Amino acid sequence: MELNPQEMIVPIFAIGPKGVVVQFLGTGSFVGNPPLLITADHVIKDWQGSFGISLMPNLHNIYVAKIVARDQPHDLSLLEVIDFKPAGVLELAPKIAHLNQLLCTFEYGTTRTQGNQIHISPATRIGNITRTLNLISQFQGAGDEILELSFSALKGASGAPVVSNDDKFQLQGIIIANVSYHLLPAQISSVLDEDNQILEETQFMLPQALAVNVKHVRSFLKTVQP
Image 1 (spheres, rainbow, N blue to C red):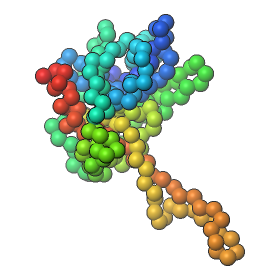
Image 2 (image 1 turned 90 degrees about the vertical axis):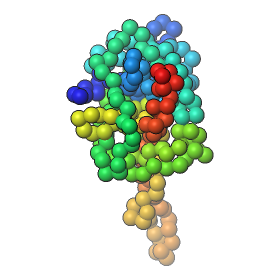
Image 3 (image 1 turned 120 degrees about the vertical axis):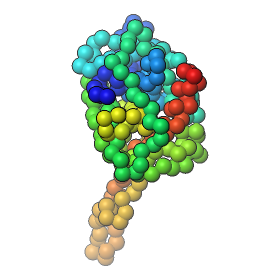
């Protein structure tokens, strides 16, 4: 299929009582039949009001969304967008990609808030799965075979889809967090005194995105759309 990411992958907003955008929350994408918006549960869990989305570049036309179902252990939520039908949906991959297969994500992590103005800024990242991990103790069910990615995720990227970078654009997972590793030994900058004692040391960190495995997305969607 031909993918226009801005028609399927959208920014999610908190909507105030007067129907105005109050805050940018994260990223979501459309899946299923009929189409539902999937995102990370932590993107929407702290807002008690309404939600909304918009399409680039027309950010003034807000479509209201409501929660359909939440899967808190796997950090996933599904929303219905009222009076809106996306141009297409992302197909769920039958299994995760092999480690050297190129993947990409389209997300809104570079969005900036200045005063009352929200400047939406999309970004595309390309990389691959570096490994799958068992991080259940840290992320509950979401940590079961969680995908570690070769690229990082900024705060607003939470909820963004990771898709295969080919003509199918199959959904591989949903970004929920970053994990940081020390770059050792090459990336340590030290300042020594005359006796070779360390006065100052800077250790650089390498952030890598983590994504909920598509198998959990599939199971969750089946509970809503059997």
